[in-house]
Length: 126
Image (tube, rainbow, N blue to C red; front, side):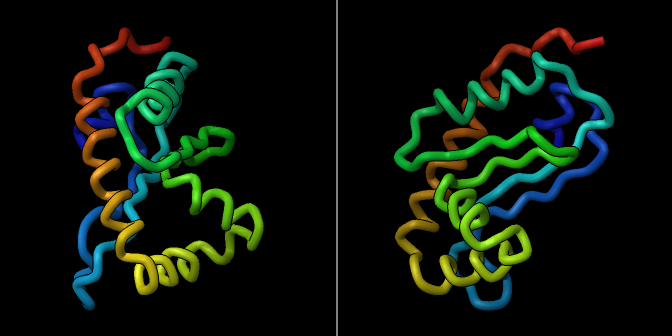
């Protein structure tokens, strides 16, 4: 994803956004990635996007581990309560049972991506 690579050297990423290819239901969007090495300025860019993009839902940016992720805070709360091993189950339950949430999250996610695209390119950390 070129957007992520603007800020630092990208090792890998996973993006879920849009309809489930098998059932057609809208999915809960999320973005997970890892930089080969990223500094404080890079973290600040994503924290700012999650905190300041005009969105209807609360979102979480987590850079505490090796992999970083952005997801609706509802997912982060449920993961904390139920454990990370429940991630796919939580995502499927919401996709199958709360399409209104999925649609609202997709609208927000698009706004957040737009916000990130408009952030001036920061000087990369060394």
